[in-house]
Amino acid sequence: MTATATTTRTAARVADAVKVHGAGDTAVRALDGVTLGFPAGRFTAIMGPSGSGKSTLLHCAAGLDTLTSGSAHIGDTELGALDDRRLTLLRRDRIGFVFQAFNLVPTLTVAENVRLPLDLAGRRGDPDWIDALIDVVGLRDRLHHRPSELSGGQQQRVAVARAFAGRPDVVFADEPTGNLDSRSGGEVLGLLGRAARETARAVVMVTHDPVAAAHADEVVFLADGRLVDRMAAPTADRVLDRMKAFEVPS
Ligand SMILES: Nc1ncnc2c1ncn2[C@@H]1O[C@H](COP(=O)(O)OP(=O)(O)OP(=O)(O)O)[C@@H](O)[C@H]1O
Image (cartoon, rainbow, N blue to C red; front, top):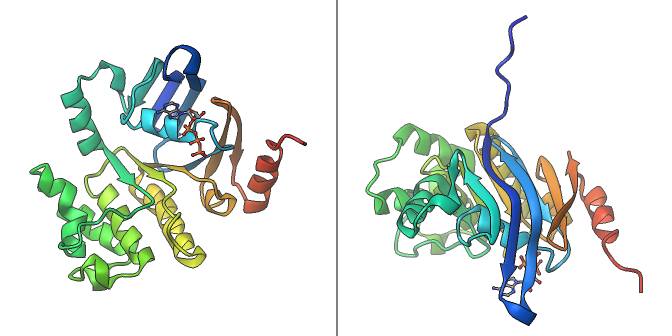
């Protein structure tokens, strides 16, 4: 029998990740030995109580912050081995970001905003890829509009297309629907999952919202800086129940 080539590539990962913020009496161990991989083609949500280390994990996995010990990789590249310049280039060329604030440039059109990271990097990019992205996010009839002429949901769809424009290994999203109503938020979340699967990229999202997390292929739960649970094929009710279990009875 021939072996099938179905092994999923791990787009980003952390191993034994420890992050201590501050020093001395005020030191906080925000990550306490997390080992976790984010597969290509999958949408992963990170959940956990306030202060459990979600943002710290996202920032360290994305090279926006450095680990105290352990390692973080994007593809085969270990982030701790890079100097500041190489880390900046890696973030620019191999990682996409989507934030709660859409962060679009108001004077540029939709098409120009999507291409912006490529233009700043002096890269031509892949026109077919960008063309396909425009269809995935459903903005073909808005390409020449400016952000102020778009709804919040449409603006965040532009930000999603921009995050994928440079064919990154992984897209990190930090509360991407925090500024959207539930319908637009649902559209953006559906889009993040579809973009992950159709472009075979990893999408990693931090959220507080069980409804948002239910759009992911898998939810990972942090508590006190540790990975304490994972849930495949999540539903909002199951995620909510799992979150309730973190609440300490008073
Ligand atoms: N720059 C910092 N300096 C000191 N402590 C920090 C810093 N950043 C985070 N922390 C602490 O590290 C712990 C984890 O914070 P983090 O922001 O990663 O948690 P979180 O799960 O994202 O929280 P939330 O859901 O409230 O956004 C918290 O105790 C927090 O107070």
